[in-house]
Image: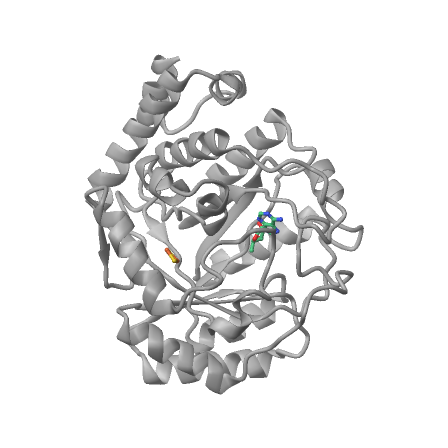
Length: 349
Ligand code: 5AD
Ligand code: FES
């Protein structure tokens, strides 16, 4: 099995059969070896640096009804909120003072935020903080909308594909959403010139080894700049409330596999990973991740942006959260850096 790990490190890919063996292997020894190789590869490109992104969850209204998600339209228990432009800019100001140079505007698919409104917000942030990167994570929009946001100054776009298996996609989403459209959005975003992030949940209901292999192949084909993966965690007010959460080990295994497939990818150790294990994010970094995304949302709305149960960091001020994160990273010999943390090209890739 260790041969397969080395082969993946060298060739950045495996056959379906080989991926299956590696994904279904259960030995801790192989997992440690995989994590070590991935952390080594990550260090070769990014050193012992961990990049931070300030996450601003600016609306939890959503027109969609994804079966796994706590802010789905049908969840009447969710207390809805939207931040004003001023509140968003306040978050950026706090974040900037704390050293953030990337702001991630994340929200549900909220019709209130028209293209004009989003363009206005991007322009304001870019005007005040020209040295910062703006990342959008606001779901599926038209090609023209994506172009308008890019022209306004947005640098990056996160849109997890959720699963690259169309049958599985239908099991996670209502019929009006399609994998085809999702993938088209990602290709459009890339063509427009964004640094693009795709990703998927680990251990989501009905996920199989075969569907994960499709995810890996899609990731390889899209060649994103970022890949966001984290365990599925049930939310008590969703149709998936009784499904079990994704596993820590499989998530760590996948982080490492993705690092070895795309050596210079930006790979976050996600909040969901920190939620299923108190040292999940640290373990993620040691498995090859190199990004963390502390929350910059105002404290009074944090408990409302709940995609899943038991989310961590919902009671902390931004300043506490970043200090905590710095301490956590330092404890493992890593350093949180103040910079935009752009993707590093290697040999034109
Ligand atoms: N568990 C884990 N991750 C989730 N997401 C949404 N709901 C859940 C959940 N219950 C993830 C999706 C989405 C991202 C913003 O959060 O992958 O793209
Ligand atoms: Fe948020 Fe520790 S990282 S409180």
